[in-house]
Length: 223
Image 1 (cartoon, rainbow, N blue to C red):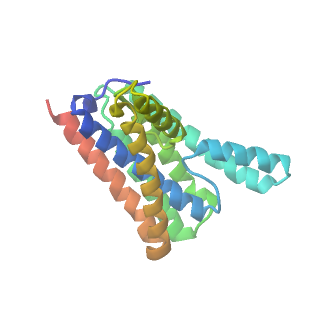
Image 2: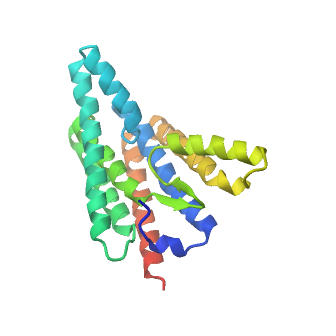
Image 3: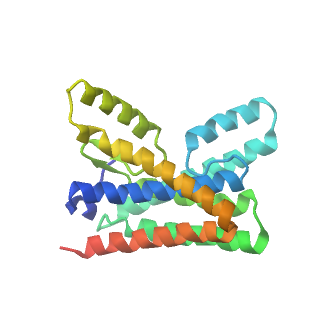
């Protein structure tokens, strides 16, 4: 659902750039989450749903529990964010990103104090679920979510229509940039985790989400 937002006042290229930054953030968090959790996604719930089914069918109950917890945390994040958005007067995304930053900080503290395990990384999935409430429709393209299967399909379909001269390139560019942003974000997250360690890898998305909260607040304050 594309609720009215202060972001709608921005030029289309600026809207797409802002959405690409939040998709890249999701890719970053999903990349580090997947590595730290040994194969559990924190933003790609289609993959987790398949893994849950496989784990249950093969009797891997411990693995099924881990994946199920990630699914539950993500669902809770989406639900909480949806309630916030529906009750918001300004429709600004600033509070969503601010809360996401705080939740990510909780995960960092838990990992620092008690080490890496599923429970301590569930806030990552909650934060990613939360941010799906910042998705927008730009030029007919639904972008800004923490998953890009739909964007990848839209990219291919739009490219086909463009090639057949039935639609302009503007139809698929938001989808293409969304997919590319997730890929680049995941790459950055994995590189940070491998070369800089857990602390730096987990601090970065906190700063990132906080910066996006500030940007959205500035946009909301402009008349």
